[in-house]
Amino acid sequence: MSSRLFFSLVISFLHAGISYGATSHCTSEETVVFSCSLGNKTVSVCGSKGFTGTSGYLQYRFGKHGAPENIYPSLGDPPTKYTERQWVPLGGGGEAYLRFKKANYAYVVYSSYSHGNEFFGVVVEKNGKVIANHKCRNNPIPVSIIDWTDFGTLGLPEGPQEFDPTP
Image (cartoon, rainbow, N blue to C red):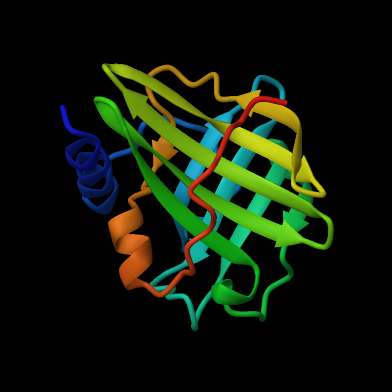
């Protein structure tokens, strides 16, 4: 299956209201852009309904279910101010990410598909270097609508093509 087809199918399922059973920090009033269990914690990216790069919001949330300890950014700034996206084609698939930039830190949720293998997670970067990589533990796949074609049309800026989640 091509990566674009894979990501498009995931988007179609989510827009149809199908749930993958993943825990999320998002409310029922929000769009779940990405969410997965990391074991005893959950990482989610929640968006306002109909968000674009210049209106609405995207917010990174991390922590125990029901009690996120890291919520970034505060509401009010448009997504283009703190978020960048990228889709990198790989042999037999591709890798996509959303990077939330906060001073000298960044929180990067990613989705990768290559030759039938799927990987999802969140990387924490400090001064551009990976200091942690938390892989998703959902089974089946985590809730994710990461499709960089859509995010490009929404006006989110592109990040660097190079992305290696290895600390």
